[in-house]
Length: 315
Image 1 (cartoon, one colour):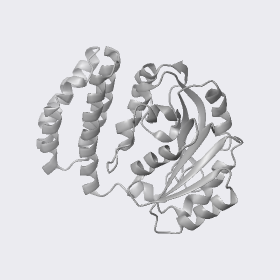
Image 2 (cartoon, rainbow, N blue to C red; image 1 turned 30 degrees about the horizontal axis):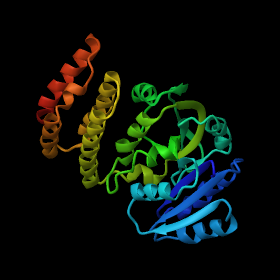
Image 3 (cartoon, rainbow, N blue to C red; image 1 turned 90 degrees about the vertical axis):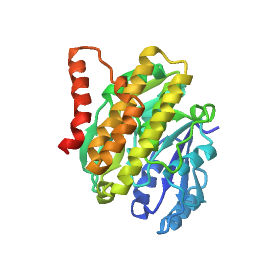
């Protein structure tokens, strides 16, 4: 069995493919497999992908499927992966040359999940931001979640982890097809199932802030879908919490994590939609999920509850 499979979903990103795939081929890990999965692209992506497979048949496998979105494409990649571990790299991003070498020692130690860090870069490769987060070794999945949930804004990004594939297959974890925020819905649950998690100080993933990535969220119809899908992910996560043997502390933190993310999205809604979605939040009794461990947090919760009542009038 190969040690690591890198899954690359591709949809109309021919402009960026060479940079992405070359960054994978520069890695020194000879036990690597690369899956290039064409999600029904209509540009020149297929031609480029086939050429890379032809020139690197021992490492690269190319697959083509009908367009169904990134969640379905990642699920497809997991089903085809031969590696004990899997990683996800978006086709318009790339990784640094030493990333897999730095991950190798932890993979050899059989760590369930290894987390690394991400840099936001522009299309010329200039670093715009290094996204920081906690560094730790050999925590349980619960311990890791309880730390990352409050200190790492990229907890739910699949692109900053190397996962044991069996975490997905044994638990029947799949990205929810047809939804927005599919990462938010799944990755925290995968993390909670891990026996061991290590987070390293390595900025190995380059997330490209292209013009497309900056403007693609301007469609308000998509904003509404994102909110509805986030609520659906919340419901699934709450069911997971109730059925899982998690500590009382972890259950509270999972509820807080999902609740905070959804309430923050209220500011994206127009006035005519706000009342409906506040009602949906009230129906789920989500306000009680906000933890109150001290006086400062109590004041914050009171302010939030008052603001939700006044929000429609003030907006």
